[in-house]
Image (cartoon, rainbow, N blue to C red; front, side, top):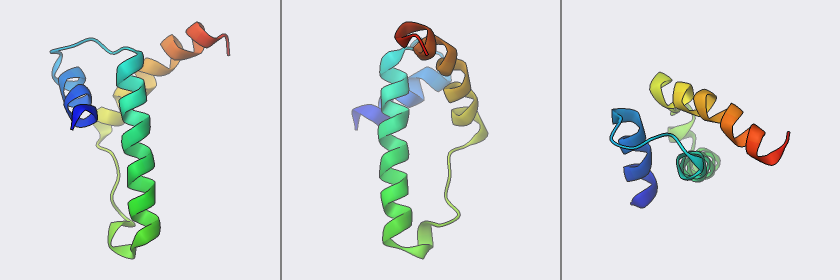
Length: 68
């Protein structure tokens, strides 16, 4: 899966945090939400603190690009 690879590479420093990283995290978050809605087995599943930090780091970059 490209989205998993992109996020993993961004977490390990093999690639920079960019718009593609943000898009990949958003896609994975959407998939996780759909899993949570489909079964209570996934209710407590979430992103690691590292992914959450990565997302926070990327927010200013994306906001600056789109003028939020």
